Length: 284
Length: 316
Image 1 (cartoon, rainbow over the protein chains, first blue to last red):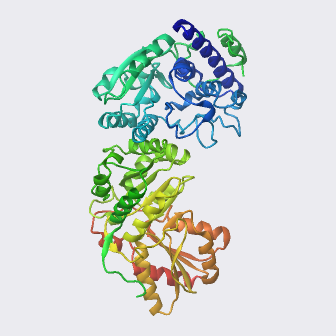
Image 2: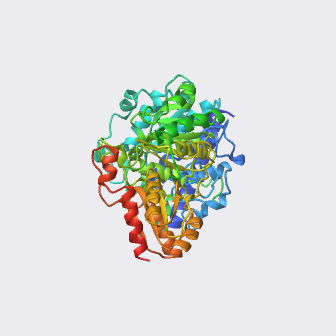
């Protein structure tokens, strides 16, 4: 497939995932739309283009498959949509998001055996450590596939992230590509106001990581950056992609603010938002 | 004495030996340690299986997360550090990445309790059993001597699920069978008697044996169980015993709150309420001192078990 055609198809998928996210969160009046819309392009790029994985034959150990760990568990709506549309579980289950007896818990969990989820996340700062462990297991198993992990720029205020950053460098974990979703927002305001988050690239460089940057809402840039990152695997250095995104991307009134971190749209707001996102693959 | 020993040995060395032995049999066993390999006696494993050993540095939260990740790929990680750092410091990591996610991680906690000694209260955790047993999916084991710790380490390698294995620093009587079969969740009966049921765990098991000998001379026949597994608790064995003895004493090197006592009390309260007394640490932190001095000062002695037994019997 021509690259332009491929990108157009991924963009269409991303539009549909954004519709799913908004409809899921609206239905239960509960969830995290802002961050979910911001990371949709990355998740679509990974699951529909980059990763080698077997949605129909899910195995928690994931041997000889690329693995993805979502450390920012609160953007679960986007992940569930991508997993369902990849074929991990029936799309109709998206309507159970955050409901009683659902496998689609508010934050991702393994207790309900939802295909595609390998560990619980939600309490922040833990995913990179888990990804390091899974990457080490791959090395011991002579499994040459790659481990991916998505963190948030608010999340990296957690000390455990930097423990993992030290560890990955010290143990030369070079089958890992991590991402930081830099949308500049967290619950109480901007990441700069709350915790003086700046020079993020320099911080990771100082911890010995191979650091790359991209715009996480331009799929062509995401694909190009990950493909270049893949050529750097196996160089005895962990890799991180610092990914600039816009919270609420794709919905004009949700962008440029932290207000939509954990608020569901009203009926009217949902209709307004959906009118901005083409239904490309059919709503669930 | 019904039970004798020829040597005193530390339970942590039993862990080190058990880990090494288990790892020879199963190549999926891996180990992590947070800058305490000597204290945890993980040297033999590290030497023979360097590619399966991961130095985690002084970064326990990451060690627990990494251990959880290693299970994804079929590894069986044994993560070792002092009990204080293996529990309270990393509670949320254990809660989410290990217990809730039901990962096959073995949390191996040395230097538990006040017998850690001279380092003092910062390092003497007395709340760890409580913290760990409250987590769904978690198995909690507290062994009594070297031989049993070795056997337990090998047994948990074959069990699929999160385990908290608690052991200690000092040399204590090594009296259990070196070839014992360790059964997770089974109360081990050491004495049979009709007058009182005694439940002991960890270093207090030997003290309870000494207490049983004293009690026998006083004409009191105690039924003693080594509760090496706090969770799952062997309710069947304990309830069968108290039906006969109608009174119980527990003994542990742990806070009263959250320890063996309240597991046992919950069991009898729900099924067959009887008088109970406890030998445990009473809502206080420890302090510096030699292990035996601390055991005496905090009342974790055979004499206090005897007193508790007499009091429990008087309340029947």
